[in-house]
Length: 250
Image (cartoon, rainbow, N blue to C red):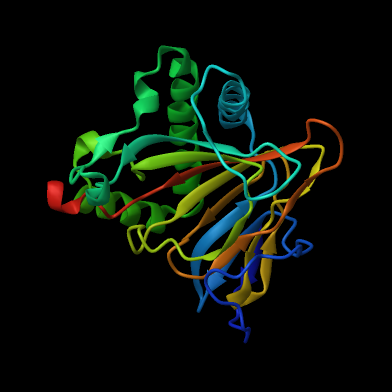
C-alpha cells in the first residue's frame, strides 16, 4: 500500500460551491498520512465476503423492495437514496428524540438491511487491520457518544446509499470528531462520482468496488458529477458514518 503524505495547499473553494469534474489522482491502494500519522486509506478493490455482501446490498437497493427518497440534483439520471440505522433528533419536525430508520420496518427490505449490516462488520474488520489505533479510538468514541440501541456495528450510527448523487463542497460537521466514514462504491457504465478534497488537491477514484476510509469532519470535500456512459449506467456510494447527535440520550 502506497503512503501518501497529505500536504495542505491553497485554494478558494467554499462550502456550498459545486464540485466540478476532476480526474482522480489517487488510483492505487494508498495509506493517507498527515504530519507523520495515518488518517485514512483507499483500496481499489474490496474482496471476499465484503465484496459479496456489498453486491447483494447494491442489487437489493436498486430493486423496488427498498424504500427510497428521490432527488433531482442533475437532469437525465435517476437519483435516490436510502438511510438505515439511526436517525438523529429533528426538533423542527416535532421529533426531539432519535429514532431508527423506518426502512427497518419494511419487510421487503430485510435482505438489504442484513447485507448492509454484514458488510459493515466486514468493512470494520478491514479498518481495524489497516488502522488499528484509529479503529480503537473510534470504538471508544462511539461508546462515549452513542447508546447501544443507536449503534450500527461497532464504529457507526447510520448508513446511506446515494445513487447517482454528486455533492457540493461540504464538511460532515454532524459527525463525531475523531471518527472516520467508510465509503464503498458500486459503479457501472458511468464516469465521475470521485471524492475531491481541495485542502490536499486529492481526488480519489470512485472505481467499482473501491473503499475509502476518510475523516469527513476534517476537511471540505465534494463529489464530482456522475455521467452514465450508456443506458442504465450508475454510481452508488454505500456510506457508513458516525453521528454525534445521540450523546445526550445515553
